[in-house]
Length: 160
Image (cartoon, rainbow, N blue to C red; front, side):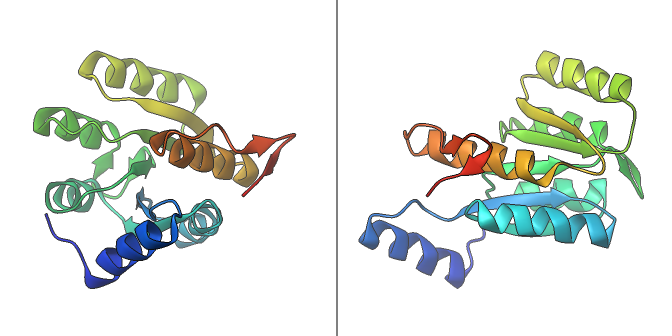
């Protein structure tokens, strides 16, 4: 697995200071505006985001790098997000997924059922435009649960 010097520095700094480790988020999103919105929510929840714009790029990055979570659009330039789910299952990847898509609720439900059959955990499924506060809370809670801590949201707000 490839690990950048910055990631290694972040990990050591987090350990030394007793802070939560910086989590990595793979954002599978072709729309630059949506990516920027997701990026801002991710950063405020303690994630470093990496963007890919296609199914093929997502699959390649998942083979080479470790991520804490994936946000996945279902309508991508080279196919639909279910291709990424299928490849994850084939590779034995169990990275949690948050679907953020403009596709209808039935399509998102179908993907959730497919993922469940394949052993992939879809944490949330959001329609576009995504509710940024809800996304931030989902990411923050995932980060806390990985660290063995309780959820960090309270009355719709993130607490540090």
